[in-house]
Each structure stands twice: as C-alpha cells, then as structure tokens.
Image 1: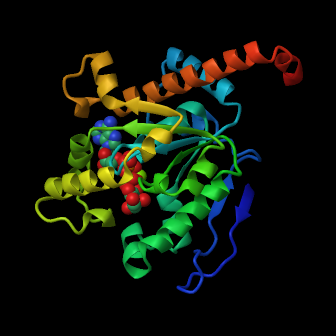
Image 2: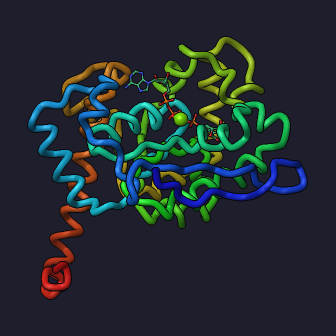
Length: 270
Ligand SMILES: Nc1ncnc2c1ncn2[C@@H]1O[C@H](COP(=O)(O)OP(=O)(O)O)[C@@H](O)[C@H]1O
Ligand SMILES: O=C(O)C1=C[C@@H](OP(=O)(O)O)[C@@H](O)[C@H](O)C1
Ligand SMILES: [Mg+2]
C-alpha cells in the first residue's frame, strides 16, 4: 500500500489545520482497485458500450483527476462514486477526508466547535493534497468554489459542475434531513423549506462561481434529452454517463485542437 503525503500538524484552535489527511491508494499512481473488485460493490452494471465509453474517457483524461462541484444536494458524492467505478479511479470525498482527519468529528460539529473559516482552511488543504495525485474522482463540498485558491488546485484536473434545480436538491436533502449541513441550520420551517431557503441564499451569494467549471452538466438538459418530465427522476447512472459524455466532448475537442495546432505533438507523445 503506497501512502501519499500525510499532513503533520496538530488539531487545536491555535493551528489552522487538522491532524494528517491520509490519502492512501492501492497503487503508486493512485489507480483504483480493478473494476472487477469494484463490481462487488454492485453500484452499477456496466454494459459493453458503457465500458468502451469509460475506456475512451480514461484515455482522454490521461491520469487527470475529475473534481465535481455544485451546490449541496447536487449529487457530487453519489455520482462521484459511480464515476470512479466506471473509470477504475479512486474516489475521495473532501468532506469525509476532513472528518476523518478530525478523528470522526462531523462537518456540522467542526463548524460549531471551530468555525466555518477553520473548515474552509482544511478544505483548501485537502484539495491541495489531492491535486498532487492522479486518477481520482473527487467530490468536493458545495462551498469549495468560493475560494480562488481551491480553483488553482482543482484546475490541475477537470472540473465538472452538476447544475441541479434547487428544488430538486432541496427535496433530496429534505429526504435525509438538514442536520448534516450546518449552513442550512439557521433557516426555519420544515426540512424542505429550510433546505430550499438555505440553498437559494447560498446560490445568490455564490453567483456564477460554479460556472468556472470546465464542464457544466445540466440535469434539466439531460431530462430534456432523455424525455423525462421530472428532473428529479433522473437516475444516478444516467447522470454519470452524461458526465462522461461531456468530459469526452471537451477533451476530444482539446485533443483535436492540439493535434491541429502542434503537429509535432504526436511525435512528442512518443
Ligand atoms: N440522481 C439521484 N436521484 C435520487 N437521489 C439522488 C440522486 N443523486 C443523489 N441523490 C441523493 O441526494 C442526496 C444528496 O446527494 P449527495 O451525493 O450527498 O450530494 P452532494 O454531495 O452534492 O451534497 C443523497 O441522499 C443522495 O442519495
Ligand atoms: O455548500 C457548502 O458550503 C457546504 C457543502 C457541504 O458539502 P456537500 O455539498 O457535499 O453537502 C459541506 O462541505 C459543508 O456543509 C459546506
Ligand atoms: Mg457531498
């Protein structure tokens, strides 16, 4: 087992960082376990056409990581896991890494016991560490987009914005409750109302930050393409496939552009 860098620091209010983020991978360049071993998780059955698409995207990515951005409840963690399985990449959720480094303290407790700013410092540290690695799918926390430094780290890979109607995200969050999302706690009313109000406020504050992503995956666009009346009924897999297709479109375009612009490139590729 190869361990990448582990942050050495102490967990206290004086220091701004938590004790070691342990980012360990099964192979030197952070390849995920072979897809077969992932199949045991049974997250997705993979028809041959999807396998071919996944393999094409892996080639275009050439080891670059995928960073999923989007509001709370947009499906970053859920779709990210499926994407990692399809690509044979390792999956990391930045929130989970922070919670693990904090000895299991939840995100909500970190906000309460330390501060949002403390959480954000650690979020940036996690993204900095992950930016040194390859062949990862990273589900970021919804607020990762608000710090420019985080874009510097995420832009080492391909950034994908899951653009989901706030009503759909609010419904998903309400189904599990808002306790785990501290930025929704100050709202009043039933879980759906709290979630929708909180998301609406955050969305206004964050403006176009998410639009800095390399790829925008609009669930409304997918629903239209697939003939779904209700965006909320789109399956996790159909969204993951759209992410792959959009990444392929962007990277294929880049590859063709590079081929046109620098004919020597194919020689340098060896
Ligand atoms: N396509 C989907 N259809 C139905 N529920 C979903 C879908 N994607 C995510 N969810 C659910 O929505 C909630 C939020 O998803 P999550 O992946 O945690 O979002 P994020 O990480 O962006 O906050 C979870 O309970 C998850 O199971
Ligand atoms: O939008 C945000 O600022 C946050 C989103 C959360 O992650 P999810 O987007 O996975 O819920 C988590 O990082 C924290 O509660 C802050
Ligand atoms: Mg998440």
